[in-house]
View 1: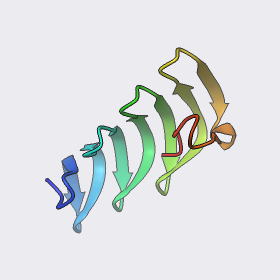
View 2: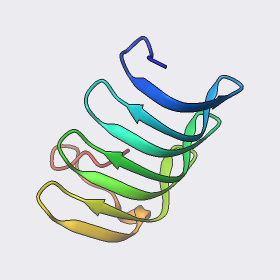
View 3: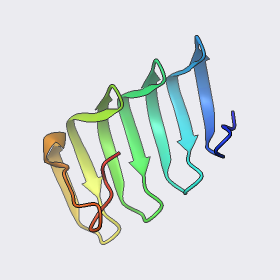
View 4: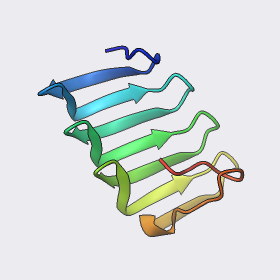
Length: 96
């Protein structure tokens, strides 16, 4: 499905919302591959930013939850609790 803003979702729907495994390709180049529940990222997923930064781990209610791995385009990597994934917007936009 292509949204009016140009984002594209490939996957399953339930009651009009993304449900189960799917891939969301955002118009600005980011890609989320993972599970959805009620239209929100929920469960295992991988979010790849257009700049090459990537987060792989667990989501709950559209937010990072539990443990995960952040890999940056620079080659740096962080593995641990997602509560530590707080970065300044100008240095890194790994908020999704």
